Length: 455
Image (cartoon, rainbow, N blue to C red; front, side):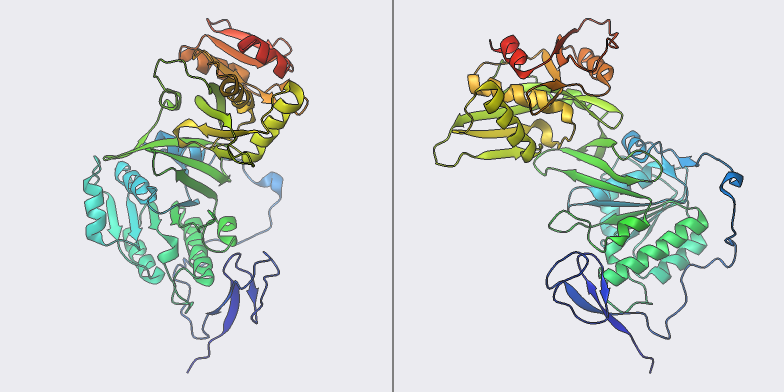
């Protein structure tokens, strides 16, 4: 009988130890080690081997030809933007998100849209009938879309050798297992080994592979951290269940920018790309309400306008509340401290609630000025004109700092019919040459903004 080898793995970071440890030396987590059986001595060979087609040789860097990577441009404009222009041949892409957020629907839709290439969709979570019923709700059909419901990687690779697909979608990596490892699917060793097999397949066959993954209750990608290092791109699919909009973010991308953003609208007919997010993120009530300010933000290469909502009320209890949605809570504390120190506003006895409309989570520092003005508007109960927007970062001394790509923000505001935009007076150096109909108001300090809007 063949001997088996076992080791202890940290379920948080994948750290391997020959014995059980109470605390992980790598991630400092307690009671996270689980014993898993490693590869057997009589284990089968690698399921994907193409012989010695590639031989590693030492090459001088200057002798390596500079070529542009070949990309598969998809009908999904949002996915193309997030990936940097399309799917790179031979790349392996990890997509993670909460259960029920729409990952499987998005990539089933992508496979059906790519009717000019041969797509293999490997489902380890749903049966063929379940996938077929979900595909029937989508308004797309393709004769080059193939479905395989299997979890054994050796069986999957045998089918791949016969089919020779142009694109492979795995749903999900946590359900697959390789016979070379005897631990259960979803364990650290199984995820690491199956991901390594798909990485070898993608690089040797020059076929792009999408790996759909789960996330933990803390929001991190389930499995060892090495999984994110092995892949070429990591995409985060997120959104609020109470809203119809979903956001596809880039956390890692070896072939493009890591600051791009794709926005989708979930409907009964699948995921619809949102081409003009500014139009859907702004409310069109026509009423002048206090506590609302419009910010000109930029995510990646895309400018759009978002609505910042603030509510400031007297605190009933001893400790004031600070409730934030879609914005950094520590940044809000900073802005409140600036208003108290530089403006004399007493927010220490007020409850403050802040929300970014549409369920978005924005990290652009240029929305600081809009957040500050929304707070002041709710504090004074004076509404801000709906035709005014803001683009500026607020410093600790109360100065309004300049932000990058102001011209694009101004053009986006003018395109949506806004009449005035407040920006920083510093750092522009007279480079703003916009000659449109929108009024550009450069300001230096928070006091200037208060006098202009509420004075």
